[in-house]
Image 1 (spheres, rainbow, N blue to C red):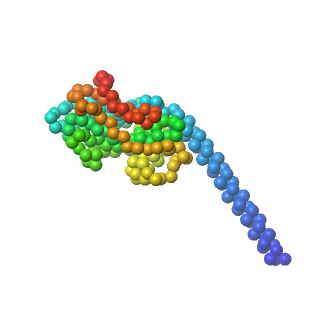
Image 2 (cartoon, rainbow, N blue to C red):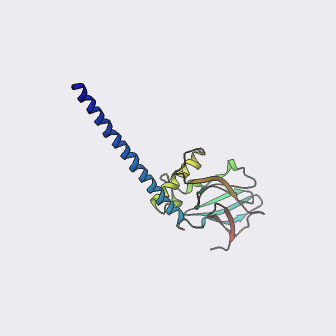
Image 3 (cartoon, one colour):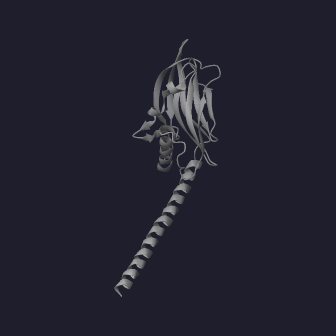
Length: 208
C-alpha cells in the first residue's frame, strides 16, 4: 500500500512538473513571438534614407586631410562630433551593414582610413557613439536599442559571424566601404547615407 501511495505521489509530481514546464515553454514562446512582432514593427519605422554621418573637409594638403565629422542618431539628433587628421587625400569610411529580412537595414560605422592608410590601421569610429555599453545611434526606443546593441556586440565587437540569429530576423550582414572617386575637396561637406536595402552612399552636399 505504501509503495502504491509513493508511486501515486510520483505520478502526480511528474504531471505537475510537466504542466509547469509546458506552461513556461508555451508562454515563453508566446512572449518571444510578441517581442518579435513588436520589434518588427519598430524596424519597419526605420527611415528609407538614414544619414548617419556628415563630415566637412576643413583642410587639404598634399599628404593630409583634416575632417570635422558629426555622427547622427536614427532620430536625426547629433550624437557626437570629432576632428580627425587623416593621411592621404581621400576618406574611406567602413561600416557594418546588417540587412533585416524583408525590412530595412541597420548600419554601424566602424573606421576611417584612406588610400595611404591600410584598413587594419584605420581610425575607429564606434568609440564615439558608444556610452555605457549602449549604441547611441539607435536609442530611439528600448526595443530597437536592445536589438541594435545585440547586433553591435555580436557582429562588430565579437565578430561572431556564425552566431545564433536574433529571432531569425537577420537576412545578411557585410562590411561596406564608401569613398569618393577622385578624393575629397577642401571646404566641401559630405553625407554618409544608409538606404533601406542596405546600400551605402557618400554624397557631396552644400554646407548646412
